[in-house]
Image 1 (cartoon, rainbow, N blue to C red):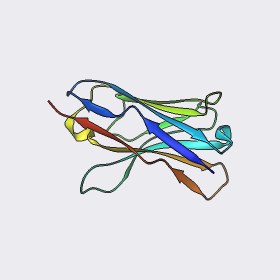
Image 2: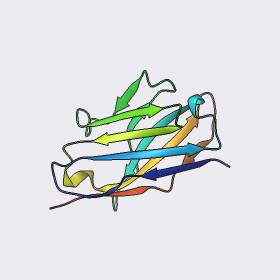
Image 3: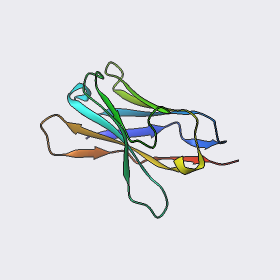
Length: 118
């Protein structure tokens, strides 16, 4: 079955950095557009960043543009989210999402907690 496993979350001070990873299995990774979402307490889940199947196209929420970088390694079936200049408002559970090109099903990971606090 399809599994998406996020890792790399934790507690970091404002201005710090974290790198999230999402390892995928049970799917043809290179055929899936990958996305990172986040959900803060009491808020709706929001799209943070997405990356095309080849990694050639990326898109970011305005709130993270210039601070976060999404990338992928199709040989390792892994997508990454490099987060720099973290702020308390970045505190959320971060989720990995995969949708096959032309497909309808969306797969989700279990999420990883990111807490930005001094």
